[in-house]
Image (cartoon, rainbow, N blue to C red; front, side):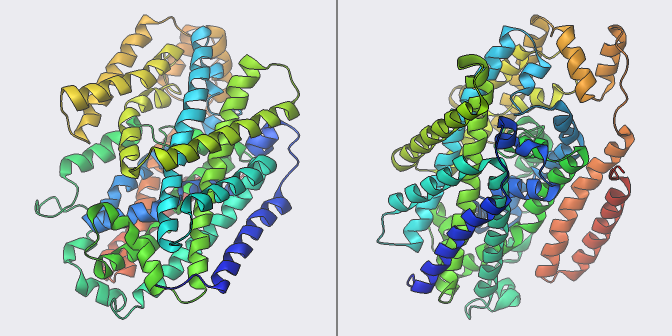
Length: 577
């Protein structure tokens, strides 16, 4: 074990100083709530997209990937790779719609899309449920992961005190900076954290017990290096074909999960709407998808494979700790501080965004329109800081005294969010959907999840099929039993957002409303979406095949990537002069 030296401590201090200095240099004055929560719509696509991927790179992410690879091999990553499908749809289909909506938060879309008291109820419900309670739960499991990391890296110190101090640090610069400063801090933190992970993979491969990539391949079973689940061999621990098909055909569009919301909600929508224009919004979402699924995984996977060789006896529940143990074993003096700072970077970027995003719901979708109306924006800045402080306190208490298993929270969120995606997607395409439809989509999944789990005894992930099907049937029934949305609201929405599809066209014709031309030809997106999915997956596989010297497979994957890249480059919207 390497002691935490003075040079390690110095690196961490320098990193924390830069975390404050960089956003101070780039921050803008937060005169309005739009400045504070949406950067005044002036973020570049690169900063907006990088900030999204930095948020999804939490302290627990490398540990989760290590656990997956240790249990199932490389193909185990399909439990999150599947979400690339929905992310590409967000980039090409939903990002322009979000930007054209002009909403300050994705929940504000409720008042733009629906009418009546049910719309107000839905807006309040989502702002409190997602912005406060669900947001606290998400931050709590990030805290739990950071506590576990600190216990290994810094034994003998109070890990609760360390995590509390880091959270307080994140709160102070989040409350002061606003989204612009946070986004630049996220960008710095992402590249810092990725640099640390790449160096860790390099040092891990250089260990005598590993012997580089060739040694790694010699020491692990061949099936460990499968990029797809091996459905022909039931003795392996790969995903079953049923589970795999459920992920790539159902879960990506039906289940709500933070950072992978169907239709691109949450902090993904926040950064999309903060981009400068529609093209920048699309680019930010596309860059996030590429960075998230192509740039990030391989250093983590390499470290995970090394941990399988060095620590084969780790309990199943502790496989993720192999990532941190590799740090202790492989890093020279000074590098342990760099990797510790990398974990802090991942932690801070996630916490800062969730504080800002959660408080944006509380302030703009609950307090300002319904509780304390008509005040100056600076008054609401104070409300934002108070709400962030409350969320911080609650999440720390839950982390230290309630949550024990991160994976249990993950499964709970995925199951209880099953079926929500139907409304989150089709509210853009089906005028008949109402606020009651969306309320039903949030309430019914929990009921059906409990029924499937405790009454029908359906196992995960097949329980998702039951929850999704039952929720969609219930939502459709509620839709036709509820009163249609006020035509004046729908007309404003239609003329502002330019939603695509024949259902809106038929609605406009039936109500004698002039048809609006869609900003781009629909056929381009019909081609761009599958090309984008192929682009991301082929890029991921090409780099993996290159790393592990599977050159024949690499050449095939490279040809597929080149073709999809050429199609994307040719059809992607040009910058307007």
